[in-house]
Length: 501
Ligand code: BES
Ligand code: MN
Ligand code: ZN
Image (cartoon, rainbow, N blue to C red; front, side, top):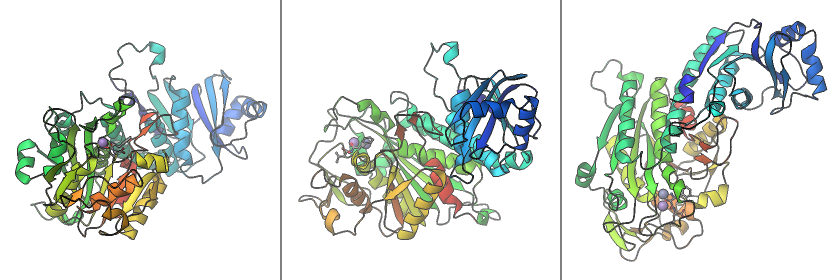
């Protein structure tokens, strides 16, 4: 039973409810919306008096609670900040969930904002209400979320509901990603992940799953080198959403220069023989967050019937030490034909992506590729938890991605990437093979990782997002409870919009 499935958000005409729990957004300047004024009147001026007494100024993030005023159970005034603040409505919605999760029904007086903002408010509310309680069998009643019905009162309920319907598909994608990322590795191993991908067929996504035999036949030497120490079979999942209107008059559907999204899906990263220290190793259950984001994005795009062709490819493996595991110093042949000297088995994500990137590129001839990966600890040292690292071989692509990220609050910071044969790239030259899987030292670790990937992407426009610092949050944010953030889904959805016919 999931909290999210139980939450119902509806949009209704701006009529002041006679009772219950009300949320009153109030911006700086304390200007009240029509409904808020009606409420103030119903309370004999009690709303304004209470806000004044509480020293409430309408600042973003501030709030004031009125308990049992008039015929109401509770009125929560939420600071809406200055008008036009980036993602103000979404943040406000998140605050409603954070503050009122224990109420059963809530009405939000959203008549002061337009339909788009009312829908954004609902999105923020929903995303912040996410829970993953499936393994908590002893939750006490007062620890459980109760919020089941939210009425957003707006002057344009039809328009707001339509806008929310599109956002709702994206929210479903984010929730799917968060579920995948949160699942422990004993539950979500490659085969189970692939099965969850198969569920996207219901949305019209074509889903193919390849296992050990097929990957062996293809010659996925670097991906298989990561997987070979594990008892779990590796999988590659290829998902195709063919929404380009050009397909409408043709029966045989083949993607035409699609956008390719590629994800690192290391279901657990122990480090392999180059094993990680025990402290914090449990975090490596979410080393598949790149694959999770690609899967969630495919669900979002299909869910809102995006008018564009997008393929999503994820490499799913488990990186384990064992008698069959890859040893440091082993040389393997990648699907591209390049040989790789594996000096550190903990630099495994790039080995998985090398084969999947080359496969995506050669099979689909995509117009561009974007990969997402929890690739390096070094990106956390460099950028912390605010920005993901953005590496690209094309300035326009980099700019488009950064803009999309800014628009949805999944921010990207561009990092250096040099041409093959230059500076950072040269560190990857191996004395025994075509390339080695780590650079000369710890310095610039995220960059040398990206340089490694670049050796497998050819001339295709490509960007790599290192999301190691943003896929999982240690604390609650405006629109996500702590834990899996679902980073990448909204960003990719927004980015893809720019290509829709
Ligand atoms: N999955 C890790 C990177 C990571 C670290 C993700 C922390 C999320 C949080 C990756 O496979 C890894 O182990 N990278 C090594 C590379 C090194 C061996 C060159 C790292 O960052 O230390
Ligand atoms: Mn690793
Ligand atoms: Zn890893």
